[in-house]
Length: 168
Image 1 (cartoon, helix red, strand yellow):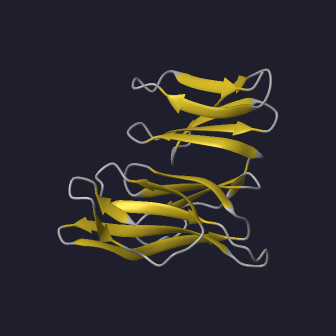
Image 2: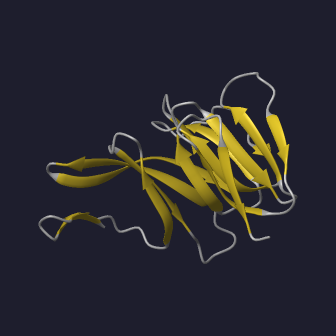
């Protein structure tokens, strides 16, 4: 559901069920959704929607699919869409078409955070190692070793600092 909070009315509706996460892009013209499936044999999808506020509408655009349920997603600059599967695989796709921009990379990832403007991607694995890389560049990623599992991360505005949070 897309609501106009000033007028307390429904602006647009889509009949997708089981949505577990959603987020707008920086411009507010696209929205991604992750949906969970009750059937384990189903190919899982992250859907990208085109949004218009006047008149209110949500139209399905591209989708990215995979054999595992998606845990996180993010829009980057230059129409890059990044997904993280529950199995720890990172995938880059074009946000307009859904086409792969590179082969999926298995990183044993548990947490992912993308800073949109800088294209810096922080990936935290199950051992507490944070890998920071810049999307679509050949630069070697930086690795930060932590003392346990990280549950959340966030880039500072300067993109040079990364906040990590753990349960220990």
